[in-house]
Image (tube, rainbow, N blue to C red; front, side, top):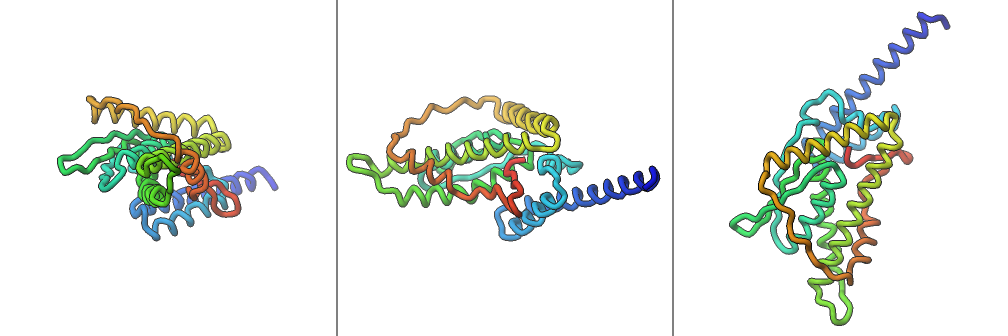
Length: 249
């Protein structure tokens, strides 16, 4: 094969990969527009299948030319019902692991709002995961049976604290692993650090009077059970013959 043939093959390969990346980006964008629905899961599976086929890093695919995916945005997540502070704790744990910030406030009707601030592609992931995991956490807490001398409410709050901590720890570890194994670890790491900095700046701009909430005190009776469930819940991190499904980037 001469130099001309090699150049042609290289150019053809680049065009093929470019088309694949474009398809992946469009699939991600469409999935994020219908996040939390069965259609979103189908679209994501197609996107991850292409990533696995072409060996493309997801962080780089998501940080493509689509400006909407990389814009900084704020999502209002309204919480109602019982255990609102514990739901806030879970969302904050997800946000921290995925380069976002979470700020909460109380409405006049008693409902609480969590403002998730960050780059859109990360915020959409936080919202999608929160929609699934809050229900799982609350259902798991409701099944808890505390030991003698421990109130059910205290035990359940302890359980949910453990659950939120472990889910956040797993996601953060997955993010770090994905960056390390990336084809461009330095580049991906810089992109994500910049995303986190932009989230911090936007939070301070939008909510200049935000103060850190008082540290919550919970018992320890349900922590282990909560961490165990948080460690086993399916976060959708692996698909397609062991290919990594990166949650946050």
